Image 1 (cartoon, rainbow, N blue to C red):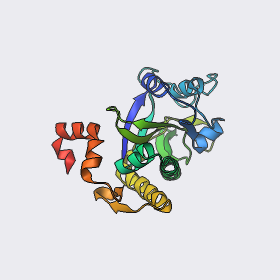
Image 2 (cartoon, one colour; image 1 turned 45 degrees about the vertical axis):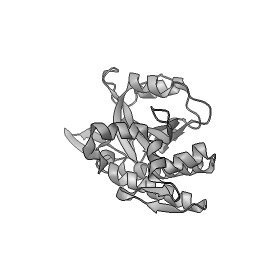
Image 3 (cartoon, one colour; image 1 turned 120 degrees about the horizontal axis):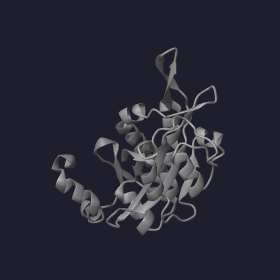
Image 4 (spheres, rainbow, N blue to C red; image 1 turned 135 degrees about the vertical axis):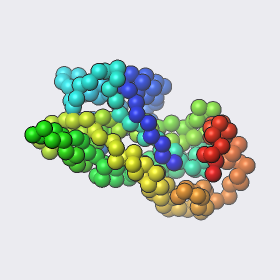
Length: 239
């Protein structure tokens, strides 16, 4: 499953830099590489990027805007099927965690290639310009808010992208939002292929989703308390 929401700078810094251990974070994208960002994410450079500055804080990139109102980025959250979470986090098959991360990064690469763009004004005319580069901060989580096993990755697509001229602009995320459902299906397809490659059988589910074969519905529901709470408040989402 793939969900998305915009984040302000102060919210992103506070939420994404608490209680992380080594190996749970990483930079991704051609834009990140252009800024010298790779490997583990450190709070300092992450905070500067959230506020639209260069990693060392020496200059602004893109549009400045009000730091308290500026969109730092968009949190695209990739959630593995419950059976994958249980098999990986309770059953101890850490290969599935790697499979999840591979599926996420394959999907992010596709997002970067197809949908990275910005708006550039020239001669008083605004044009959508494809850039094919993004700055993405990834954060792995293994629990839901209700502390159920829940393997998921927050991929924070930062509000920055670089034009061919070398200048940095705000990232226009409209196309990503428009194709969110399709991209969620693509992630599930990539993950299903990885899971099958590891020797598991899968069972298709509605809306392009799947589960590892052998789990009963009652078992999956038992470890999905957060989802059950949401469905109880919004019954229409259960169909």
